Image (tube, rainbow, N blue to C red; front, side, top):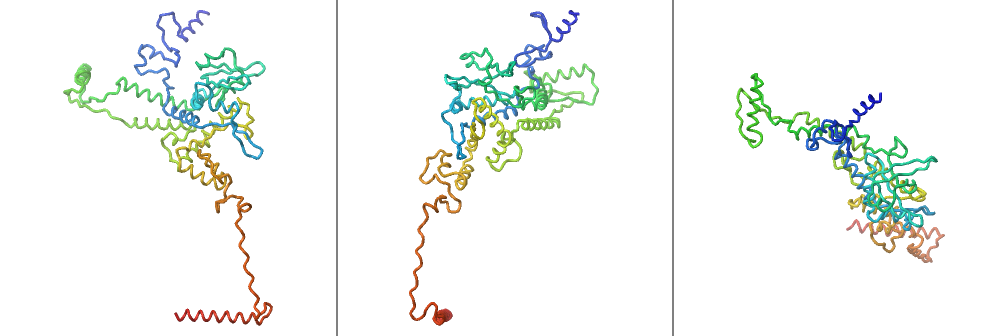
Length: 459
């Protein structure tokens, strides 16, 4: 019984004695090498791959780069709400220092770039360890490439972290690290509450299909399995004749004799092999695969510079992305930082990445928005501060739209009232209460009008 089981498992696992050949598959660091290509010492030169259906895709690279590079562009600030409904920027907290310089060998842009890149990889999670100072504040944050969550008997969460050569030389990560010192950002957790899964898993079939199609085409081209010409004839040839004709053709078209002039006999005709409709179908299939990958990552095709109806402006394009995938990514990372630094959360105390930086190249739209905002929302100095300009005198009050004057104009800067009209002198010939005097005045006015009208007509 034991020999029978050992025989089965030895065949499954492919184990053998040292130095003895055994068939694949071979489990290597970067993937699995099958039994077929494993027979070749130069399997990589023959078009084989360790990941025949999971190589990196240009569309996956574009989607991951779009998220990681965009998040890295947005500066972050620590905000705290005020009693009057406004907010203030906190500049003396541990978070405000970390969000500007996480450690001594990485900038915050480098940190966020790689953190977001790991988050949108196949694992769907990113790890960083916080190092505390004598005041029990996090003074350093080191990005780790891999992490494994551990759950204690009482439900406490710890982590085994690895994958940072600099941090591993400075600190001891032998013992599990408590969750309060670990920044763990994760996407969907279908298998475990502490194990994420990236959107690339939803596009696994599309990647497999495109990988298989492209690998087949590469193998054809590398191995020259697709001839450029075909020889055809209506006569029936024997096997020896076919072999002889093929050899004569190869003598004039291959090796040092490439480009020679072959002489055809027996009614043979050379027919060039061109692209067929199947090649067009392959291109359409790959295009559909790219669209499905972008759909899984929730990235508009316009962000990647391909396909789709263009947006009216850069602002509307970025607004569409912020309302979907990018907005979620920024908020998700902000909340993970808030949990690590024990922030109260929105709206009391929170971290916010400024997305206005994404419109830095759209000068016209940005200036028009600030100009319109100063009539209802911003003061002139607040709008100038957004553009990095100094304040000006009289620019600390919101102005109304009609006259572009401060709201306090009616109280502080009201123009002088006009002087009252002079009281007409009393007429001795007619009293105000005398009806006869009024009639006489009216008659004089009518006569003056008649005279003026007569002169006008005469002219």
